[in-house]
Length: 92
Length: 272
Image (cartoon, rainbow over all chains, first blue to last red):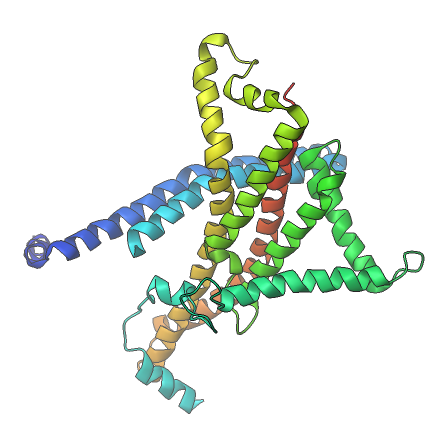
């Protein structure tokens, strides 16, 4: 209760710039955090399947590895766009 | 040792403060500030990343091919790697003319990224958007030129009016394909490299800031197990992630070149 009222008092003292910065910081955290979920799962699936392919057919390991990096690069782009949004919200 | 601790104690106060983003990615000009030929640390790194492979290849070329020197064997193994791991899987038939382009891209980006861990530079060249964007636009111009040269107008037609999807969906798929191939591609290609290097750079800065802050606390004669653990943890983290960044820099150079190869390959061969 006291924490909430303190927060309320603090919130009333904030001027517009502070409020904007605070919102941007929260948004930045969520932007990167949410953007990392999907690619995290996706990269896990890609690497797992690539390891399975390499274990089943060691002679095609080179090709599986190249394709794996390609898949990781495409999947990772989404997380990286989230990171760029984080930078834009937090610092710009 | 006490002198060093004293510096830390009077420098940073108690708070952990991340420096403003301008301080960690923008560098003062060596000469020619605010002109088109402004020369700063990033430009110096770019120059070194051009000169080192050029000299390496020219010196290796002077050695005979029947009894190759060690340097020539090394350089040939790089070219072999580009051919086998990047050009052939990415482009397919007729990859030979593009091996020099991919070799230059790979070496330029890899050396530029390795400046992240070289003392006195400590900044990856590609953590400024201008570098990857120019490289991606070069690749963009090349794959569009290769597409029109090899397939003629059919290259464009296959993208905006794809024959392999049902006719009702063609306008939609064509629009999405046009947008993704000609507009989004160079930016996603550049942002992939840029954001990876900037993220790594900021990670190393974060650990350095943590080390300075904890050391400042210790020097200001604060003590505690948590503080000591924080100091040791950040030190181990900094060393570990520095090693990690070497790998990331080379893998990102590899990824950038193989994506360039895949883009060129997709415009070289018509879709079946």
